Length: 98
Image: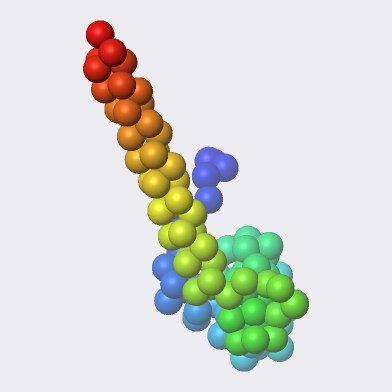
C-alpha cells in the first residue's frame, strides 16, 4: 500500500467531524468505522475547534491558512519576476556597454 495520503473532500471531513461530535465514541473508533486514520480525524476535529474560535491561542483558522498559502505563492511569483527583471537589466546593461 502506498504511503501517499488520500485526499478527502471538505464535505467528507465536515461530516466526519460532525459524527465525532454527535457520537459517544472516541475519535479512534469513529476513524476506524469510516476508514480514515485516527490522527487525520483528530486533526480535522482540532481544526474545526480552531475555526469556531475554540482552539489554542495563535492557531490559524482554515481561512487564514488558505490566505497564508495564497500570499506565499504570490511572494514566490514576485521573487521569480524580480529575478528575471534583474537578469534582463544586467543583460541590457552589458549590451549597451559593447
